[in-house]
Length: 327
Length: 288
Image (cartoon, rainbow over all chains, first blue to last red; front, top):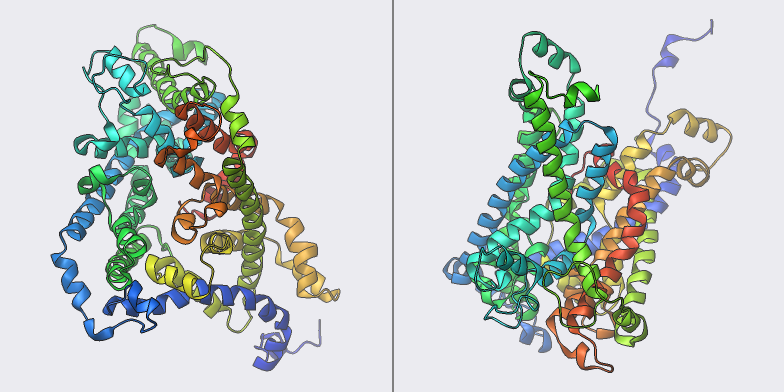
């Protein structure tokens, strides 16, 4: 390589024309993906303008199109709409408590899995605990609708017609009459929190178990030499090492706090709207069932804008904690 | 090791108690996870009204299963589920691999824009109603494509695929290029054969998502002959018509059997494919 001039080693960017030609096949491949993205993601974004209009079924059937004289009227109506305010409150309450229960419970279960003595026991427990995550919400809702059923016979004298959970509770003497958990206002939310934990706790531990396996064994050895017991080791080494992961997961889920939908949609019903209706289910009922496209788009936009701020905020915090963001 | 851990000698006592309590805790957890499914399975095999605490069926009766596979209104949704699952897995993998292959072309003019276009959809979207109106405008309402395409166009799966492709050795691409291989040749002869694990994982994600899909049917499909099995399952709980059709069958038995039918395909593959399901988390740190 004696004759090589140093200047030729500097990589020059080829002219644009050459690059376009070189990558011609890639542009060809990109076309279908871009077209689908434009149709299914970007075209709907243009529909956000309906939020500032009155747009109902009659505007479509008459061919008149949306009536933009409404302006911000939909948003004014939004803050006076009792059902919307209820749904907003329910969304925040359900997601927030679910997030708290999920964090606490998942971390504890992960720590306990980590304490299991044998690899096979760990593997087996994990396999069983992950399983419900893969059942669809429709299946989970169907299972629990059957198990939590109060049966046709409300007197509760006949153990054989009530659902499994009520049957156990009555057998153990906790209750005298079967409770219709999913159609009673007082019990719907607790039932929803528990079903969420049943489905997602195991799967949630994966990320913590990965973090736990990354903690250096030296730390524990050093602590042992210093005379720290298992409890102290957990408190002073394990938990602080997990803190970053816990924070990141918490923040990522906080950003998605308004997105709760399918789990509620398959489990709620008219009798418990006041404690279970969330923004997305309300949007669905207003827009798809009520054909009030303008107003329901306004609800959706309100939610999307808050979510956008939450995600951007979470991205910023995540970057501060672990050096890279979430999007 | 075991003997010291389990020893009740002084000093190890607290540890031994903990180990036992921990084992009891996990046995309890596993019972909580499994018993609901066993209960449904056992109820699906008993065609009489005795349920309650009975966990072991006192008769084995496949009448409800027979019904699901013979009655047109229950069999068709099952066929639709199989069809959309296969289609979504294929189209989803096609879109993710092509998109990911484009994204790793660092020098390609416009590739950054392509990346931003994808990423932006993850943080903002038009919302339920504008998307519905677009589907209506382009005439996809009541078409299965309104279900297949949106699930196939999954940006997080595409990004996952990209992180996998980025791990492939660059020198292989260069060598193939020098040998005169076209980008499409490289894609089929090098990228895909080396990505079997990623294809299996992400293919499973698509399959599970498509099989479990419910919401897109609620939104876009009102033609009863195009419902999938998940929708039909939900329908079985909402309307009691199904039970009055034809032979006498207990509605709870039918509901239980439908639940079992919709989880059985998954139960068969889950124990063998668990590692593929987990790659999503270990590979790209993308949390569902």
